Length: 260
Image (cartoon, rainbow, N blue to C red):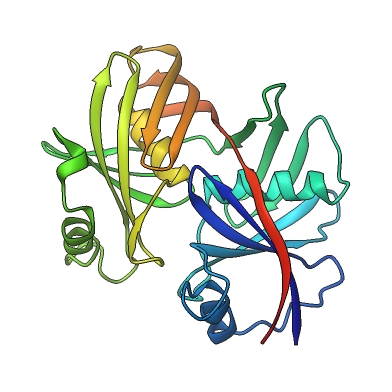
C-alpha cells in the first residue's frame, strides 16, 4: 500500500498525519503504524494521526502512539492536525473536531499559533511530593530543581512502570518553577516509552498545578526542550479548572509517499 503522508511538529513533538476522509487508511495495522513511526526504518515520529470525516464536526482526530497502540488525547497533536486541516483547505475561524476524549475547539491566531481548547479538569490527586491528574491523558507531576540535569528516561520509566501505573501507564512530567508565571517541563511519555521534546497534555497538567492565581484567570508560560507554549485557564478552586487553552506553534515539516 502506498501511503501519502505529511509530517508536522509542535514544539518538537512530531507526528505523521494522513488524510483519511475517504477511509483509505482504515486498515492500517499496529505493525504498520510502528513501522511508519520508526526513526530508522520508517518516516519517524512520536505518533501517527488520521484525519477522518465526522458528521457535525470539521473532522475527527484518531491518534496512535509510536508503538502502534491507540492513544488518549494529545495536545501537541491536536494543534498539528488543526494546521493540517487548514492546509487541506478546511478554513474556519473556529475549528470543532472530535477526539478520543470528546469535542475540542481550536483557533489559529494572528501570530500563527494554534489555540486548542482542552477539557475541564475537576480532580487533582495531590500528594506531598507529586500530583496526578488527567488532562485528556493521565499525568504524574513531580516538581524538582535543576530539571535539565534529571535523567528523565530512567526516572520517568521507573515511575511509569511502578505498581500503581504499570497496567495502564502514565506520563511523567518533571517541572521546575522559573518564576511567578513560568515553568520548565520535561516529559517521559507512555506509548513512546521515551522522553519527547514536548507533551501538550503534560504541559497543560503542569500549568494547572502551577497556577499563580488562587482563583480566576491564569496564564502560565512553559518552556520545554522543544520550544515554548502557554496555557490559559480559569481556576475556580484547588481541584476545578475551566476554559483551558493550550497555545503554541504547529508547523509542517514535509510531505511525501512511502510504500508499506
